[in-house]
Image (cartoon, rainbow, N blue to C red):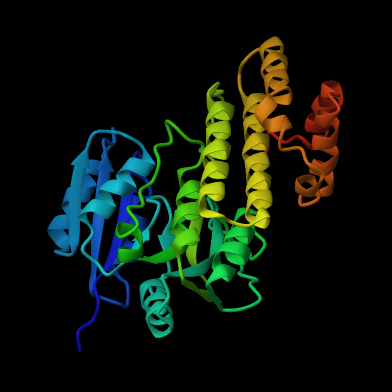
Length: 340
């Protein structure tokens, strides 16, 4: 029996402490016909050496060393070098159940789907985990339902899963035949989200695997005290490019509305970053005001969008809309949004 090859792309950067755990979970998959593409994105630690050592132990591992260009470009390198009929994108500080490839491949092949979507656990430093189960109403989405239901719901986590690239298995030809590539995070706030918009607006059928098979590592050392002043600008670029794409593809108003909710989520993340940064109180006030008055953001403060938000965020964005910045600041402090 001719078993299809499956490619697993793992960008690697500054994860020396966690890399072995990730790779170990992949090489021990119950499905054996896989190629593992480790893309060393110019990692400054011991990861390049670890990658080479793994390739010497397992002939299925291919290592590509490249200059640092970010996660999106590293994934593109993986796509360009993938020879599998199907492909995954895993993050190198996460790990997976050893049955993940087998279960997703069975689902995607038996339904002739373009992608399989699966659930995850949030995994913490102390070894505890929290299930993030899938709550989709059906297991197969076809045709316009992929674009207008599944894609829209991904932007707002309606089905228990979102727009992260690692939570799916893809038919490689569905990526390459449509010339899909990840954007650079130096340009856009969420390369995953835009890739999902492109992929699932072209997908003809998607199957749901209603199991938690992926361990998403919630690193306690991942928070930064440094404020990226370009963050909201990149968020705006994400929104503008996405809305142009939605118009070009003739996608539904529902997709547009849900995407704006995702844009608001990225905005809140920018506000959290300001509050958690080590800049002065005066600078924080100035930076917050810039976002509150941002014309791109203000154009998204529509009732139909705000209705999809949590009650707290409905109040928050309402006061932003009527230019009550001091109340927005109070609400941010009240909810202490700088904490996870």
